[in-house]
Length: 295
Image 1 (spheres, rainbow, N blue to C red):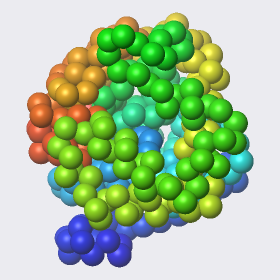
Image 2 (cartoon, one colour):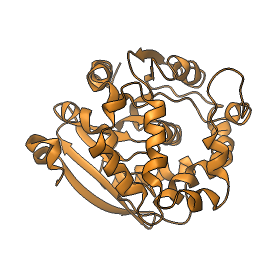
Image 3 (cartoon, helix red, strand yellow):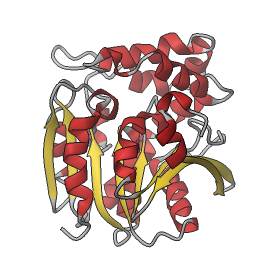
Image 4 (tube, rainbow, N blue to C red):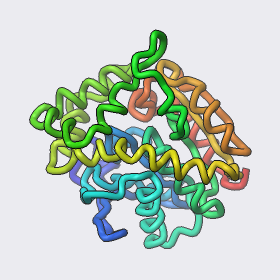
């Protein structure tokens, strides 16, 4: 690893790798020892979102943190951004690594990719955790664009517009991305200048912003595919956590509807980016939950 600012131990434990799945190269960071745990990031982030919790997890597990299709240092194909295609990328990666069963954690879009993975391979995920997001479904499409109370998710329809968002943000990626980090964090310094530069490096690369927008352009397909999977609830233990200053208990309220064995909780003094804002509080929840795959 050449992320020297993360410290010698981090760069010794973790290695960057690439592998080809579904005809594209997926970048991932891996290290540790023990049974595998896969961490899936959201938008607008990369594997780097988990940098503060990876070492602690690596003391107990083999940690695998991919850049999702189109994001970070993974290839940016023209299509394939629905959560089930992206989940299949990750599944093929775990099969290449010869993992028969994994623990799985996802944040934001990565949480719904994690759901798609678990729903498609129900006997191959021992435990599943979701961070600060609910299930992608028609309830999102039915949210008012201009709510009198509550949050406006204005960027959902904006990102779904064909071609225009890329044209408007080209050359302004830092301004655009930083708006999300500043508006949806409680601990503003959690995504510092170094982190901002890393995210901008990835999203400002050719095709980076388009790939991010393409996740939103695939939402109605996601809704349709999820509608079939939710007919049968997931049976593995599930933990759904929200940031106290973000969605709080809403993730739990959403996931408990489609998971038989779901526990919920709130991370204090955190906005949307829990792994960066409150990594220690998050670890206090994740480590006991993931410790025993059988309970």
